[in-house]
Image (cartoon, rainbow, N blue to C red; front, side, top):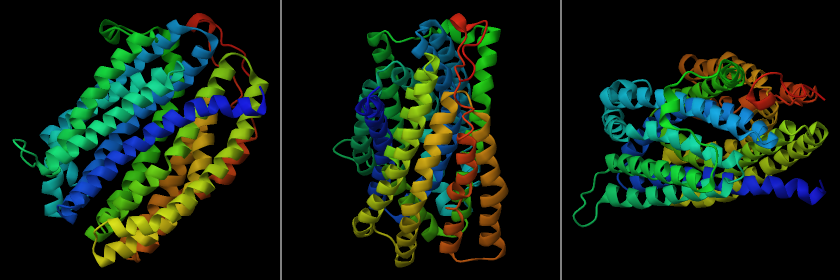
Length: 458
């Protein structure tokens, strides 16, 4: 493959996937911007309640990442039947977890909010949001599985189109339901939740139509309750379980950041919510690179092109560093605009400025680690290393340090925020050392989805 070809295939996936990540970030930005016109309490409450969706997505994301590992390699091999089998498993587990989250948030929203804050105002406002938005969790798990199929089957632009249209719809409905128009009454914070639920319905319907139209591997409802083939099920959980634990460990640690900030006051919560939105929007390209690299490298490994995959891995790692640096500069350039358009207390504004400075260098490490741990390693079935790396870094180092500085030492908010941005850089040396072992250069497919594994290692 030529030098230009190395990047052309990657860009085919990076652009639509990054756009999809960006559009989803715009929903959070839209919620924050519109609810900011109401009051800071609404803004902070949605920020904390949104952590439930963040925690929920760790589960379907883990299932989808497991699908990507096997799906990309089997698609590269040309085995559509096996892709369909893996999709069936992914959908089944996503639906189960979605039902659980939807029921808990509908029937016990105040208990859920108590996890994140003890402020009565934030609890009441957040509970109203959670009860309305609860149905979206089940629907999101389904749509994310269908989006994954479209990406693996070389239709990333279509998944991006549906996701982007869903976001546009979400933002329009935000304005309608939050403030009201004509016969539609203003619902405030609950209006933002209703807009999200409607957008998820749109995603599920149109992603299902897209898969049927493109003749991508699909699954019928009756297969969701059938017993899986033992070999395929074993392979699925072999690669999915570490990714799921990695997602839960990493995501749980990030959620703990919000728990820590939630107990440092309303100003800290508001500033952290805005900084997180800005960082997520800019990091869309970084995450797009990671997802695209996983699909491209996985397809090469599944088709037996191990040398090519190894060569491209090194090129994409270097690219991720430059993407991270560029993303940090973008955050710095956006700082004056962000400070001008948000309406916060003087203390919260000061916190926000500092948190954006921290985000500008944090994103460099995030870009590099996302590409290697979230893209390259899983592409070859190396899913356990990321699990150990993220869980140990967060739960044995960063979260304990953050809690000590926040609750025992009573350090200033910005000192705590700095501690919570160290995780990406703590693990870089270990990550790169493991990368250079090239244990990820493997073909993990089986003949017709069963039997002997493919070429094991270069």
